[in-house]
Image (tube, rainbow, N blue to C red; front, side, top):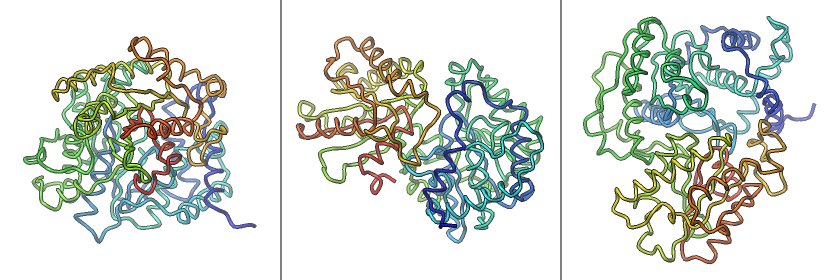
Length: 494
């Protein structure tokens, strides 16, 4: 047999993605999600109790869970440099192996390939299924979750920061019998409008990670959600439920992640880390913890990257893809620290927006949120600019990586109907929404293109004729990852 490569692993993994028609037909019933995940775990040779050896800090929420996970991992690594600290997150930006990290570094291609095919082969050699309706192999996210467990167990990590994928109660990560501590970041309203759920529904789902005898922590939440969290913590037997108070001095502490909203995430991370290390210790912002917060890296979230080949082109990368996160994005971008950095030379400076979203119907509300926040933020910082002219060009593109219609292997997405990609359905919806929201915007400055490579090429042409250009890329982490790949930013952004 020829040597199996990283590309082979990625190609096999991509066969586990659900296509558009399968997603439209509906997901597996939630009440069988955990039993099915446990069945797959058993087929790979593990028992649920084995996962307790990972010493898990389990984190969920509507927004900020990835950033909080990154802060928590950085703090633990700083406090215990002798430890191996695992970090499992989703999605990835450029390479799928980014989802599984040890001490902040993704698995190497060799490690990922090794662990992938060990798991793949175990499933191949043990095809027995408890229910005939179960697929032979788990879906994409389930498989990567099992892969993370397998890798971390083999590497004998001392702690594992485990980010929930979606929800909580029925999420693939929620098969660890007894994590060491659980945490919930901000609960938002996005799922209320998108999925027709109430905030109470969302709180019930998220609190499904609470476990008997395990501390449960949360940021301050809207009252409707907080009532549910408190009740569920009692029902599920959490050893205590704590709303984390803001640590003294945190607002004056330098954070490795930009944006006002990161203060709340960093605060929860400190509480999680210190509870993990000693559930009875007084939580304090010590110098070593402050250093961990300052050194935290989380690419693609309120990130500023100067073009490696030209200092006159600056990329502002934020994978914000919900109403609330896009609001935070513009709160960050429309400030002198980011998009207004060159406002003194506004006549010569060009601002470009590169945008896409995977749910076309949400596009108009997303763009309206961005414009509304931009207007209020400009007034707040005393700028004479206005939202309608904040951007000089807007580019709406698909998440297809290359101009020839191909995806980078790690960025392949089969869940988008081919007709949408061919006809640029979502992109034209975004174009129409922008024209209605900003009627005065020049039509020639609105670009609808079929790939990320097309968008990057337009940006480069614009930057060639301007003394300085700033480009905000947002609306999709997949889009941000594609830009990093196509624009050659990996060495400076990741």
